[in-house]
Amino acid sequence: MLSDHGSEIMFAGRLLLGGAFVFAGLRNIQNRALLTQMMSTRGVPQAGAMLWLGIVLQISTGALLISGIWTNAAAALLLLFLIVATPMFHNFWDHQGPDRASRINGFTGNVALAGGLLTLVAQTI
Image 1: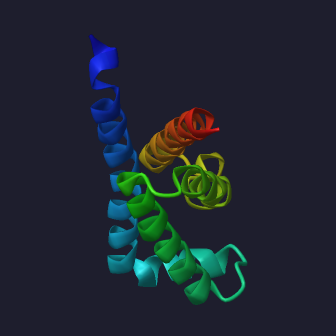
Image 2: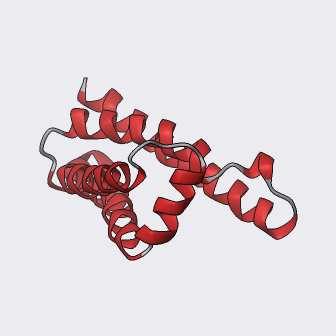
């Protein structure tokens, strides 16, 4: 029964996964001052430019996932993005209390996204 609807299920999965990155990128535009400051504090050179690079990467590769174009490359780029961004923005080990719990949730969410991206890469090899 599910095999009859495989392409629709794959589209829904790509829509949800890619949509999460498009949404995050658009949200990062609104929060760019705070994010640039956080990145500067962590020693990222050219933090403003690097933030914009990350935003463009999130939105463009998320859109590629949704559309099914260059899915493997888009998923691989997003996986690399998560490897860099997750410890930078979800560094729960440096926090306590509710802030720590929030960062653990973000870290765990990004790990789950990475799992979805790996699954997508494996299906397109």
